[in-house]
Length: 304
Image 1: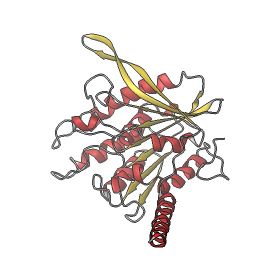
Image 2: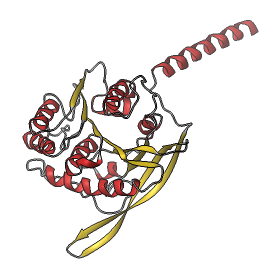
Image 3: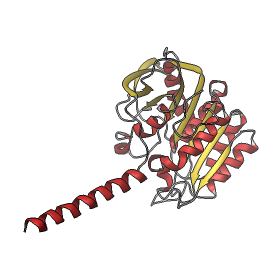
């Protein structure tokens, strides 16, 4: 009987080892051992007809443990029309760790109306049949501006080497910011950016307006941009990503678009969250092109 139990134990143990090895081989990388995490409050001045008042935005700074001055990445979260989801907006720790490992200081700030940040949700675009995407963009830019000014005062940040990235509504907001303050950034990475995405109840809200709004960001945003979308994106399905990109380029913007296949990015719109191993080498190429990553190093390479 003891021999049977021993054999059974060995079989179960072997299965566990194989399972763990398989999962670790396919899991996305995360680097947190050499990362410092700091919760901060970022002040923002809100102007209105009744004067100016201060609003507090909650944020998390992720930075290398090593001393010295580092380039800055402002990482912008998405947007949602659901108030309950806004209170649970994720802080992108795993994604931030990828950039910290490359030498970046990363800040993830919650815009007004998200998580613990004060102020009402300001970046609404209104009704789906008559969206005001430009209004939503301007409001998001105000919040990001406060974040940028706060971070560039940190003694461990090199303000001359600032990168911006965002997912979904954050990608949209990043392109909008680059249009408003092009001289402040070295580049923008847009992960599945847009607003008014398709849901189970309706398609993309007035896609032509979205194309025109995003395309308009190219008029003043003359810096390098990288756009990463997936062909099975349920919120911004093809050909919309290429249509937005082409309008952006037509208006004078610069950039490259990568459309991941459904095999490469089975998670679709969430590939930024679940597909790090796919997008990291694409991002590395972009960072090398703009001089923020050494040409002879790949995933995990250090900043120049």
